[in-house]
Structure formats: structure tokens, C-alpha cells
Length: 285
Image 1 (cartoon, rainbow, N blue to C red):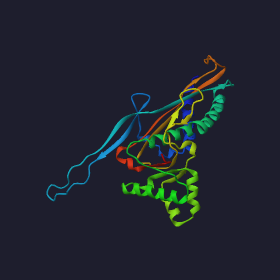
Image 2: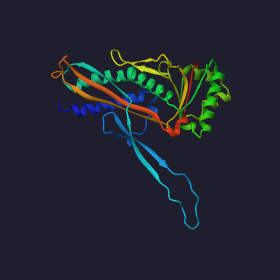
Image 3: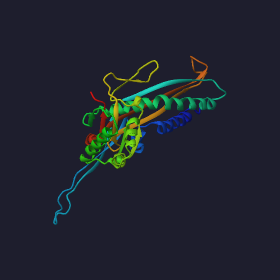
Image 4: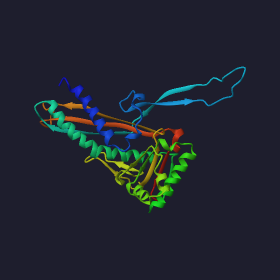
């Protein structure tokens, strides 16, 4: 199978494209050109910049020297999941690859993306130091007031709403839109984007199923999230989709089929100096 390496790269690229089109949280992915591979398979190096502030200008000595430093921090990927697929033997690996592409594409859309979105929301919600609020949002006016409080909190912390994505339960954004007032329209204006999140993906805490059917379930302590504002400049989020193995039918000991191994590894966190760029509002205790 001389061309398996090339095919693995092609499939990995294809799966990554499907993910980016389907995932609600992919808008927070960091720039891949700044990421470096770590020493181990489950590690990545993320860039962190530090700089000094202004100092007095002296007419005799001139400017005070300052430093701008770009360092790379090793971070372990906390999300590592996979699945093995068998595709019935066909005339050649290319035709089997077409079948795998369709199978894996649907798998990404219906299984991987919902779980990954849910996991990320739960991870951001549990970060110590972000701004959290809770309570029942029974109507548009209550939701409008909660959104106004979120915007005020972000701006008061010198955050920029224009770089914050508003992830919100569809029913809530609908109630705000139904008010059809200047205030309601203003509450939904100015965000980097408004993304409606199905309630099944929107919890403060979930559990990932290790075996069997896989997937995820809501943790017993998890609260339903009403909305979450996340500054893309505050989020540290990276994901990699790979097809590390392709085994032909003659090498497959369990079936007359091509075996494809799919794996996705990633992490999400927040920069410690930008925690106030994340605001989570969930249902009451």
C-alpha cells in the first residue's frame, strides 16, 4: 500500500474541512500557523506574548528600553478520542477511500462535532476566574437584561465585544428578537457573531463515555447554559483530526475490509490575563 501515507494526509485534510464547516465552536480555533508540535504526540506548543508598558521619555536619555517576548508554552491535549471503521473490500483503496470519506464525513457531523462542542462549552464554563451568572430567563425582557449585564461586565473589564462570540440557546435569542425594540436589536448588535446552540450541547459539565457506543452525557452536576460570550482572543483552542492508520483487507485479521483509524486530539483553555473575556450564564442552582 505504497500510497497510504498520501491518502492518510488527504483524508485528514478532508475531515478537518468537514469539522470546520459543522462545528459551532470552530470560530474560536487558534491560528494553526503559530502552533508547533510538542515533543510527545499529545502535546502542542502555544505562543504567549509578553510586553512592558509605557515609561517616561527623558529629553537627555531618550526612550526607556523595553522588551517584547514571544515564548512557547508546552500544553498537553486534554481531549483525545478515536474510533475504528471497517469498509468492505473493494477493487482498490481509492474506491474504498470514497466510501470511507462519506462514512467519516457523516460521523464527524453527527457524532464528533456535537460532542466536541459540548466538551468545549463545559470546559470554558469550568475555568476558574471567568465571569458567571445564573438564573431563570423566562421571557425576552429577562434575557435582554441578562445580555446587557454580560456586555457591561465585558466592557467594564476593558474587553472588546466586537471580538466576542455570543453562543446562545435558540429559544432565548428568539424571545429577544420577538420584542422587536430598539433595545433588543442593540443587545444583539456588535458581537463578533451570534451562534445558536442546541440545548443538548450546552451544559456546564459533561461526561465522555469511554467505551461501547461512545459519545457524551450530561453530568449530574451539569447546569443548562443559557448563553455564553467568549472572546476569540481569550480562548486557547486547537484541534487536530488525523487518520493515523489504513489497513488493507489482506492485513486485516478480523474482516475482509479496509480498516481506517480516526483520531482527534485537542485542547481548550483561556489566557489567564483575559479571563474576563468569557461570560457564562446558566440556569439557577
